[in-house]
Length: 246
Image 1 (spheres, rainbow, N blue to C red):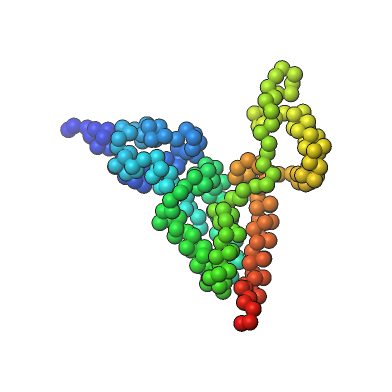
Image 2: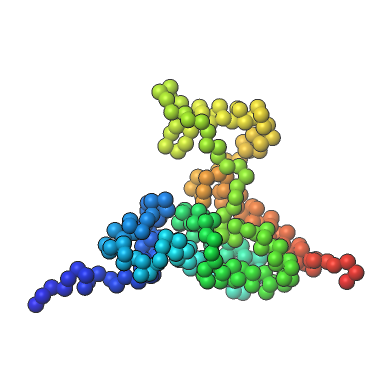
């Protein structure tokens, strides 16, 4: 009896398998190194086989975002709108922590796939079901912005700094500039921009909770999120917008 060929025993290639492999590969090697050719090698197929399921790299990235969206927890039931939104946003954040490349891909997408639109529609629906007017919901969604996906554009980004390579013991470490260089940078910052320096030096940050470079750690993210949610609730309770003469 003839043994089945490798082709016969290999799992059938489909769009979900392609996207799942792409997500796992990006988790391992980073989004910059991900290519159709590298993905084909991972799946042990010729590159042309991928194009039956994703027409190009943009469609591949759109599909990868779709998979990330499916990892976000569905809306919680039996809770108030504030709790539901908070849980959803923090779930989205956990997804990006699992897939650090997700932020860059989300920011690069110009098209809105059904999965992305469905997530946005669901978040809007939570506000509307919670008693928000359509006009207030519109403004709230603008204020929420990328925080809906679990990340923010941070104010205090880490400076790139000058080239500090050298043999004087002050060269860069694997995690960035050396302590000596960092100290010199802070001193220069304090001299020219004392208010920024004073603010930056007040807090420490847990590297393990960072979505991207900068000060976007979990405590700061939740601090700002809670401030926003409290403000949203105040406006909702006041019946905003309040139109004069009505």
